[in-house]
Length: 215
Image 1 (cartoon, rainbow, N blue to C red):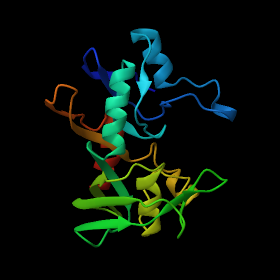
Image 2: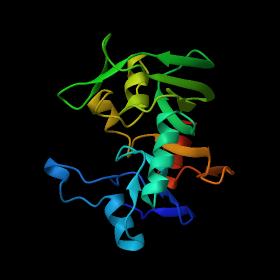
Image 3: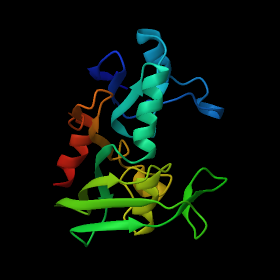
Image 4: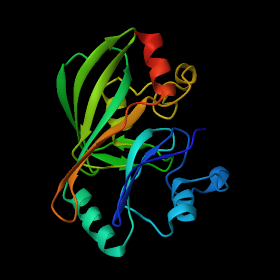
C-alpha cells in the first residue's frame, strides 16, 4: 500500500490524496489494528477533524479540518451540498445512458450494505459516460447527497456495480480486479475566506493499470 499525498495544506484544512486500501478512520473487528488516515495525520500534523470519508478501497481526495471553527464551516458545506465532488468510476457492463441520474433512497442493513428501500434517506447520484471499455464503462460521477456507499449501491441497483466491488457485485467475478475502481478526483468549494478552491488528483497507477487492460 502506498503512502498518502498532501495536496493542499493551510492553517484551516488538509486535502489528502488517499491510496486504495487505507482506512479513513479507525475500524472495528478484524480491521481494528489496521492503519488509518486519521491516525497518520495526527502523528504528522496534530489534531485533525473528519469532514467526510472515502471507503477503504477507494482512492483520491479527502478533506480534513484543522480547527474546530474550520470543522464547523466545512462540515456545513458538505451538509448543505455546497462542495462539488467528482469521481472517476469504472462500472461493470455497458451503462446505456450517456448521462443519467439515480434518485433512489438508501438505508443501511445489518450486513453493512446499503439497500434501496422506500423508507431510506433520499440519495441522488449523477453520472456521465466518459469511455466505453471492454465489458465495462468509465464514468464521471457526482454525488448530490453523501450517503455511505452511495455510488456503489446506486450503480449496483441499475445492474452496473463498480469493478472490484465484491460487497455489491458478484464476489468471484470482482475478485479478479486488484482494487475498487472508484477514485475521488476533484473537490471544488469556497474556503473560509470565500475564495474558490478547486483541487484535482489524477488516478493512481493501480487504477490506470486496470483501465489499460479494459481498453
